[in-house]
Image 1 (cartoon, rainbow, N blue to C red):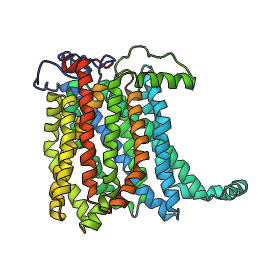
Image 2 (cartoon, one colour):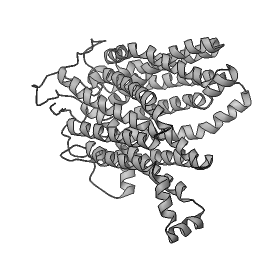
Image 3 (spheres, rainbow, N blue to C red):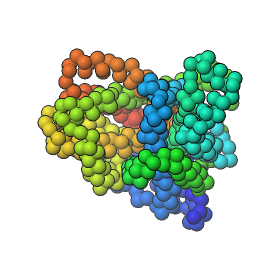
Length: 479
């Protein structure tokens, strides 16, 4: 199959993609919001060459999701098997990713936005880090053997004893940290690649397909690889690493980035200058501040469910984990028939409008759960209903972010948004625990997000007003 090409301006006005096998197709001009026409136009039909591009990007997402299931699912079992304490597991699996997300990814995002090479600005990061992900993933299950070799070297053994570590803990920490770092860089740059190559007017449908493929990756790992892990743990690590490495590098070869204008900043290694430029652009317009606030509010709304939903299911409703698994399976089946319809509706109505509606629907869905869930049966019904709405939110949210942030600095704006949300959530999480200790009622896992997502809708309404001032659906230009 021929390589896929995509040309677009830095602000996201896509011209037609080209392939070696097909002539260029011309689509209607569009702004970076992907909007065109007055009112609510019909969604444009996706041309054949874009379907080929979609195919490669979706394949990349499939192997990425497949690979990303290995560490959070199997590594805790591996660490526990080798007598690591719960404290060590939490530090290795929790603290390290948080550090990368908060302090390293803004730098990587900034550098990716400013990079210019003959291969693009995202793919060079992906090509370099993907093989390193494969290597570190393969080293994780071999960590005990590496530790045995280290402990046979006298001075290394003495050094470990001096700092109070055993070899296995140290090697696990290093190999997992390496994996976390390389995967954070690669997956972030892959996410930044999407708005560079996918035209905005098709983003809703693409994101719907993207989420469906993510569900497929989860299913394949759970159905095929989990059953092998008990007896062939190392083989699963090696097998998934091989599938990911080969599959993802093929995507890097087939997908071609557009030509970008010169970088907006002069190359500098001065961290103060980099930070000043980063902050100056990310906080330069009040619309972005309202957006950061809305996404931080959404992050807060999810804290209660992430912490206490399982406890509500077990202690309040008396359900077991097997029942929860069945609920998730039926939820996936309920969502899939609506997936493409959701994306088509987002492309027609525009994500900047739909995100307010989706936030309100999330609030109503959680309120219904608070009022009407009385047992396992009603839990299943309202969980399915809510997760359909949540799927709609996920598609709208992804398209909204792509359509609103400036394309020339997309990576740094996304990383700034993630950084602010992460800091706020880290602050609120212990307060949420104190709240549930006070109310002593896990049913509030539904009322907590119901109230907060109303706040998300209000903040997004403010964003919508700025969006109209910046051109709206017809002529939006990111400020």
